[in-house]
Image: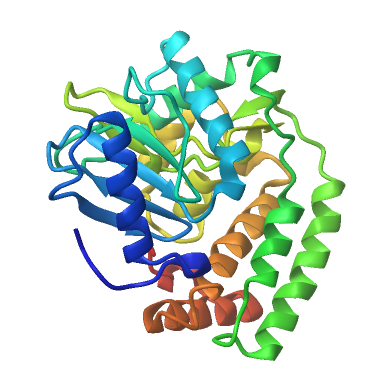
Length: 305
């Protein structure tokens, strides 16, 4: 396992590694040779057998949210929607050394994203489902996420930039409250983009990252793909057209599109701002994004992060 380094909330590799070894020992898995995939608000490890992914939260205060994600994953398996599956035969989530721990089946050996039509098909299938009340999904509201992002801006952010983003958040919060949504309100993935749909070992597209499931206007699940095409140029016109064709609705033709697009790019920018003090590359990209938002500049200069 890797050593050194600190994630969000002061979560260290050493603390995560100790929790990993203890949690794996509790359930009869071998932590030897585990590879640290990511360290942020969660530590994510791939076990050496290549079949199990272990997620460890920074602290156990997130237990309720993790338990909800586990419940969502189990329900998706019951309704046969292709998504990331929990390792069977293990009671989850587990609390180990003050961390909430979950065990997931590894989707693939080598990272391979699926296509936009496949993402659209999965979202359409998901959006037709009626979630059971037992999941107790929250109602989606972008305001708390935006406010948390603003509160997380630290020493790496200039006061004038923080003030500008705060003013923008105030305006967008009011505009969001006045939107007239046209798609049915209901179950959403919450972070639907091409990075969260992988091709599994059988070649099938599956949804991953189930943490943000909520009840909301379905337009929110379509906004990132439109934004990535329209403003960032990360998708081609043909790719976006195929997404629209498979889903059956073009969110860019809806009058509220610009407000949702502005909200999502603000959230993406605030997330980088929270990393700016510790990561020079994040600080550089954050500054670029703030300047383009302030001046109406070209978002095609934005880099995926």
